[in-house]
Length: 200
Ligand SMILES: [Fe+2]
Image 1 (cartoon, rainbow, N blue to C red):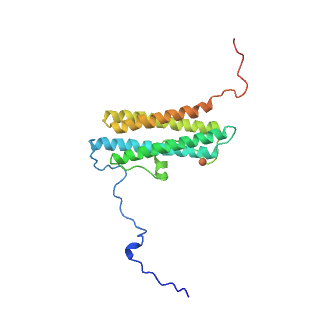
Image 2 (cartoon, rainbow, N blue to C red):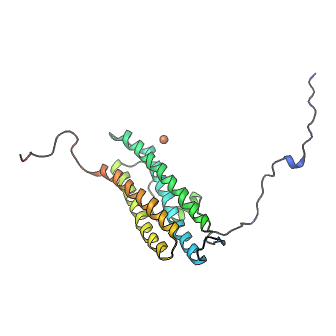
């Protein structure tokens, strides 16, 4: 007869679930960081980067929405391209968020908070045609590029070279590349018959 014996469990071996406590750092504040940058500089850069982070998370999610919802003759190439850009925007999200923490700040993270902060217009839940999908992406990229250039100049003026480099080398260059790749899909060129007569 297999009679199971009750197992003794030490209290210290059980997970201590359901815990809550006060925040250890408020959003918008910066803690001291020994990186030779003034607190006001770090606070300013962290605030700028959090706005950029909210917009980059939104742009990243817009790419995944379009990756899933795309339709039509260019479905396959756009399905793949949108996911490539989603992954590259995800890398930017991580770089920006970790830069906020390096500066002593608190990075925005959850979608409800992102939705309140982002400057990118909210798309409908339903599906839209490819030209509309791409137009929304181009608009979102331009919002990100405009603010990133302003923030890069501010960071340079404040001698925050690390933030300036992130904005210029990663954010601006990646977004400009993405604009080129998706924007070319809105050129109204002929698919089979050349347009007009050759002059030669
Ligand atoms: Fe997928």
